Image 1: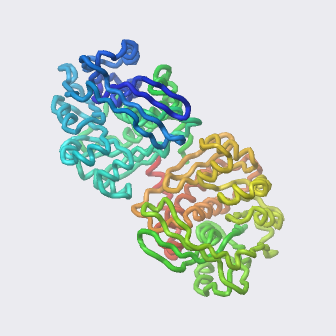
Image 2 (image 1 turned 90 degrees about the horizontal axis):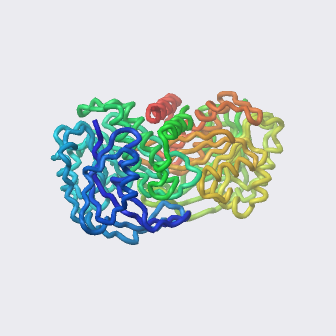
Length: 305
Length: 305
C-alpha cells in the first residue's frame, strides 16, 4: 500500500534574503516524496541526467523512498534558479533549463501499477493523464497544476482533473482556473470540474479545504523566520496525501472521512512549514516524526477556541 | 457596567466595485459602538457638526447606544471619501475634511467615568491618554492606532499604549511599530511595550492574538462577496471588547481568561465579516444577535479538526 509520486526532480539555484545556494536538490517530485515519506512508503517517477549526484540518491533512499521509477538518461538534470523578494512573497526566475526533463515521458515500473495512492506533480496535463492510465486500480488520485497549463492547455487540463479526487492549487491559480475572484465561488466552480476535494494553498496565510457540502480553513504555522520557501507547496501536498495514505483512506467518490481530510490539511501545513526552515530540502535531513507530531499539536493549541 | 468608546464620528463617501455612496454614516467610533452594542451597553464620546442628521442619531440610539458624550458644535461633521481597488485590498483617499473633528478634545460625561471598559479608537495618542486619565477605575482598556501616529508621534504613542491592556492593529502597523518584518518577532517586541495582549488584524486573512505565553490564530470568515470593507477593522474591535465586557472580564494584568480572549477574537471576526456585507454600517440596521451566534458556530465548524 504505497504512494506513487510523479513530477520533476531537479537542481535549484536559490537566493533568499538569508543566503544563497548555487545548486541544491529540488523539484516538485523530490519535495512531495520527502514530505510524504514520513507518513507512508513512497515511490517516485521522474527523470534525471548523468550529473545526478550519488549523495542525492542516498538522501532519498535514506528516507525509504523507492527510486525504481527514477529514469537516468544521458544529459543534464533539470535546472531552475531564482531570487526571492525581500519579504519572500515573490520570486523572479533567473534560469529554467529543462534539459532531460524536456523529454520526460513517465513510465511506471510494473510494480508501481497496483498501488492505491497517486500524487501527480505539476507537469503537462496530458502526461499526468497518461500516468493515471497506467495505474490498474488507484483509490485516491490528485495533484497540482500551474498558471501556464491553466492558460494555454485548458482543455487538456480539464480532461485531466475531471478524473482526480483532489486538486491542490494556490489562490491565484484557483481564480484563474475558475474565472472567479471570490474564493468561495471559485471553489464551487472548480468542484464542478470533477475533483470532489479542492485544497487552496495560501502560503503564509494558510489553506482552505473545499468540498461540496463544507469547507475547512486553517491559518499557516507562524514561523519565527522563513529561510527558503522553495518547495513548501509541494511539501504541503506530500504531507496531505502521505497522511491520507497512512490512514488507509480509500474513498468512494463522496464518502471520504471529513476528519481525515482536515487532519491531512494540518499535516500538509506542518510539512510546508518545516520546509521553509532551511535551504532547499535540508530540513528533511534531520526532521523526525516526533517533531512533526509536536507541531501538529501546536496547530491544535493555537487554533482551538 | 458599560463600555465607553472614543473616536471619530463621520460621514463617508465610499466607492467600491459594487457601487457608490456619496454620504453615509461612518467613523471608527460609530463602527466600534454599533458592533459592541450587540454585546454590551455602549456609550460613545465623539464630536459632530450641526449637519449631523437626526436619522443617524435615531439609528445609533435604536441600537441602545448612549450619546450623552457625543458633542454637537457649529460647523460640519468630519468627512472622508475614498475609492477601493477592484480586489478591495487597497483604497485611495480622495477627501479628508476634518472639520469639527480638528478640535476634538474628548471630555467624558461624569456618568461615564466609573465605567470599567474603554475602547480608544484611532485618534491622536495624547488625546487617547487624556481620556484614560478621566476614567476613575477602568478594568480593561485598549485601542487602535495607525501608521501616521507610529511614524510621527512615536514617543507619545509609546507613552500612551504602555498603560493599555490590549492593542488592536493590522499587520503593516505591527511591522512598523516594532521594526520587525516577522510577525512573531514583531509581536514579542510590542508586548514588551506595555499591553499584555496584542491582536494583529490581517483583513481577509484573519487575525492573530498574541500574549507572552501563547498565540491564537483564526482565518477570516469566508464571504461570498465583500460589498464594502469600510469599518470592518473597527467592527472587529467592537465585537472583541463588547464580548469581553459581556462576560464581565476584569483581569488583573496577567490572569485574563485565555478562552474568553480567543472567543473575543472570533466575535471580532464575526462582526468584521458582517460589516463587509453592505455599504457603510447598513448591515447593522437588520443584523440580529442570533445571526451573530450562528456565524460564530460556522467559525467553529469550519476550523475544527
